[in-house]
Length: 217
Picture 1: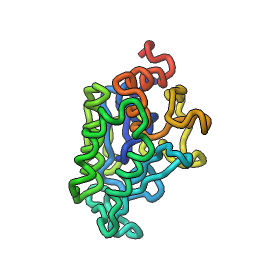
Picture 2 (picture 1 turned 90 degrees about the vertical axis):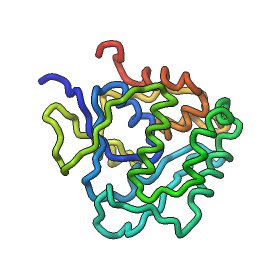
Picture 3 (picture 1 turned 120 degrees about the vertical axis):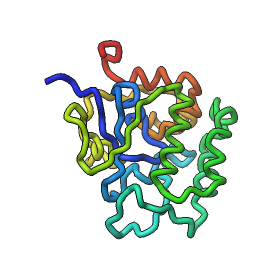
Picture 4 (picture 1 turned 90 degrees about the horizontal axis):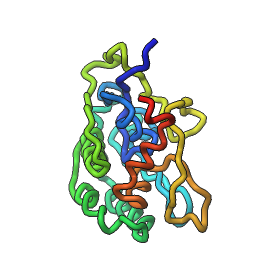
């Protein structure tokens, strides 16, 4: 069987490096918009490195306990999570080499108010792809499971909990310099923002090198 040229992913909040590597490997990336919201996934959370080790940032959503289509899921603003998340990013990465240069790309989203989680994630994804200089063919699903035959379904495979993540022969974490390397061991597959703030435009090379046998496809 020929290798799939397209991939299906779930939406993700500032996705991990593994997720972003798929935009280099696959010709077309489908984003699932018709599934029910899944809790404790990258849909509304990202993992960064802070001075206290790993830190998870979670976007609160409305009606989390109910079955809700991801495209209709609204962000909750009962608590001031935007300020909490931005302050966490500033505290964690203000000393990183490229934070001062790139912070203005992300900060406006934490000042505004986006209604739907999917829209917020897509705005962030657009910023990230632009910074990485990746031109991606992104398609949004119109029906659940309505994907092409040559599309690899990894909608649930990339997961923050290792026991729930599927094996991925097309990704291998490449060590790079992190802010707190003198304090903690290398943390693989963090949010792509960790790589961007530490490496700037060179993040593309690290991302490319995380795909085994990159030059063979």
